[in-house]
Length: 134
Image 1: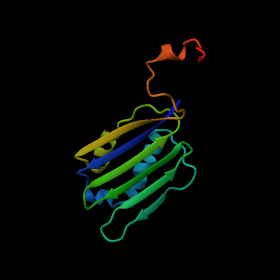
Image 2 (image 1 turned 90 degrees about the vertical axis):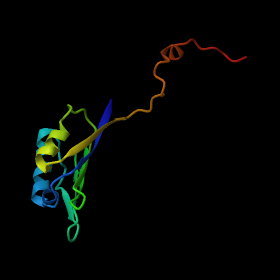
Image 3 (image 1 turned 120 degrees about the vertical axis):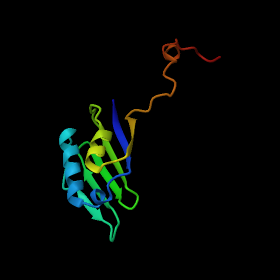
Image 4 (image 1 turned 180 degrees about the vertical axis):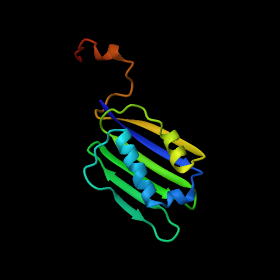
């Protein structure tokens, strides 16, 4: 069993949307509903002064959902970690629709809970008979 983490960058986004706290709250609500996530409290938000962006963090029963926006660069960074399996989801289409992103980079990382040997192809060694040292 393993968790999954998505690390997502959206580029070429609409700067006004990236600075809109209500928009980001709606995006989090959309992700939470679409992926059947379970928040354990209210999302914490921080708006940077001036033309700065917004940081959001939602603690989930499954782990966390976080974002950082950079309106001055037209960039959104999103991170979601789930400790239970989730179906694949089209983050790129969602962020393109919500923020008019020109490009979206989605990395999906498996987070195994148990440390397993790297070389899993050596099953014959695992099943070998015990050989005493002389």
